[in-house]
Length: 527
Image (cartoon, rainbow, N blue to C red):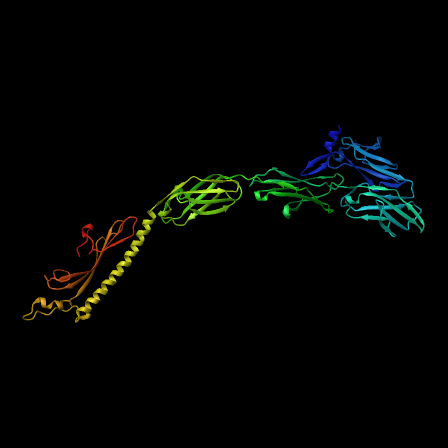
C-alpha cells in the first residue's frame, strides 16, 4: 500500500513531473503560530485531478483523530495540533502544524516558503504592549535590528535561508522579551533538472531528441518554467523557451562532448542539470563506386569527362581521391560532408585513355572502387580538324594568289619595255630577214592570264586538294615556250603547284607536285 501511494505522488507530464491525487492545505492568515483566542481558516485545495462539482465531502483530521466532515473545502480552527484533509477519492494531504501560543512575544512565519519567494518574519507582542525595538536572530546570530518595523523581509529566499529563527523585543528601555524558536524550511520550487538524450548513443547524421526533465510542486501550479540547452564551452543549442524538449536534426562526430540543460522560473530561480557526455557514433565508408559522365567511360576527344566517386555507406566528412591505374598518379582530392563527389577533366585526349579508380575515407577506414577503363574516340577531334583544315585551306589560297601576283609583277619588270596599259595591241608584222624566233623577247609583252586550278573541288574526309598557278602568254599557234607548254596561241608556265590530302585523324598534308610521284594522285594535270 505504501509503494502504491508513493507511485501516485509523482507522474511525468511533458518533461516535467507533477504530484498526483494529493490535496494541499493553505492558511489564512498564513502564520503557523498565533495567540490563543485567535482563529485560523484552513482550506483544502485540490489541483488538476478532480472537478470541484464531483467532490461530495471533505474529511478533516487533527492528529490521527477524524475531526469533521464538511461539504465545503474550508474549516475554521482554534486548537493547536497537526491538521490534514482528504476528499472521497484522494490521498490525505500533508499535515500542517498550528500553534496557539499563550506567550507574550511570538515569532510568526508562513507555513510554506519556496525558492524565489520573499520570506516574511513578524515579531508580535500581546495586545496592550508596544515594542520599541526588535532584533532578529538566525542560528543564534543577530541578523537585523530595527526601531521602526516589526517585520523582517528576506527577498529571493533560497535553501541557504533555512534554519532556526527567533526574535528579541524591547519594551521601553530596560524590558526585554524573547520569542519562540521557529524552524523555517525553504522548499524547492522545482528540483535540479535531468538531461535525457534519445537515442543514448546517436548515429552520425541522424536526429537526436534532448529532454530537460524536472518536477513541479502542487502548491505552485501556476509556476511557468523556461528551458535552455547548451554544449560545453558555452555553445548554446536553444535559447530560453517554455519547451522542455529540443530536436537536433543531425549530429556529427565533432558534435560529441558534454551537454547540459537548464530550467528557470519567473521568480529568478535557475538550476542546471549535471553534465552528460554524448558520443556520436560514425559509420565507416563502404561500397565505393567510380562512374563517368558520359557513362561507361566512353569519352569524346576534346569534350569534358566527369569522374563521379560515390559511397553506398559512410557518415561525416569524407575525403574523395582519384587516381590513374597505370601510373598511380593522383588526379585530385576533395573533402565533402556527402557520400558523393566529382572531378572534371575539361578536355580529354588520347593520353587520357586508360584505367581509373577512386578512394573514400571518413577517418573510420578507407575504401576504394574497382578500376574503370576510359576509352577516347576521335570523332569529335576529326570534326574539329576538318573545320580547321577548311579554314587553313582558305587562307593558303589567298596566300597563293598573292604569291602568284608577286611573281607576275617580277616577270613583267624583267621584260622591260612593255607598259601595262598597252596589253591589247596586236604584235607587229615580221620584217624582212627576221625570223619569228627573233621576236620571242617582244612576245613577253603579250597579254598574260593567271589561272588557279583545283583538282578536287568537293572536299571531304580523305580527299586530295590540288592547287596550281599558271602564267598564260598569248602567242602564235604552234610556238613553244622555253618555260612551259603551248596550246594554240596560248603558252602556259606553272609558277606554283601544291597537293593537299586530308586523312582521318590527321591534319592536312601539303605535297609539292614537282618533288612527288604524280602517279599517286588522281585528276592532277602534269606541271
